[in-house]
Image (cartoon, rainbow, N blue to C red; front, side, top):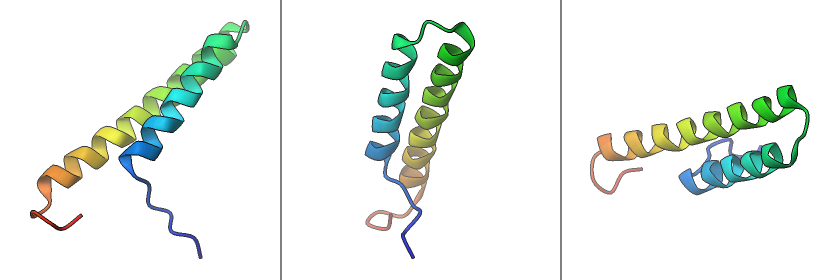
Length: 60
């Protein structure tokens, strides 16, 4: 079974990809959906950062 955990870098990369796709869309609703997806991945990256800061040093 594949590990479902993600790293901050993976989340940021997904956010960047979604942003780039949104920037190429001419359909406003699809464009907005990609930007919302990018925000989701940035939120995930921030959550991972927050969890890492809250965990004891050396335990991630």
